[in-house]
Image 1 (tube, rainbow, N blue to C red):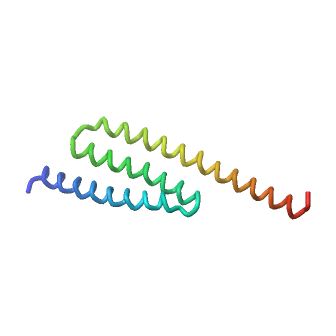
Image 2: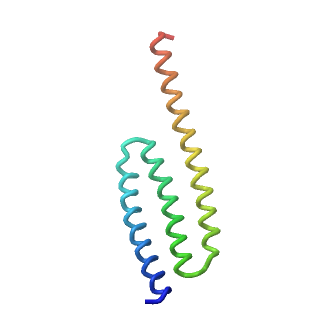
Image 3: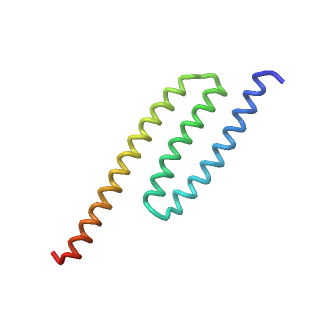
Length: 105
């Protein structure tokens, strides 16, 4: 078995595992139950997309795909930060509303 055959089998196995992980993540995204669960699932989908692109880049030998993976990683990070700030702002609004109800204002 040559090195090329090993690489082919390894990338095939990696793509299979990534596909299974993607299916499980989509289930978590749909089922929720909370907004942070869904945000975490979206972040994991971005990470899995990077894994898919890296495995395909290794399989094809076309390393330009890695630049695309870096861009997706940056966008995934920024979107996670934005959604986390949204959740914190939403939680702060709920907390302020609950505090004003307690004081009767």
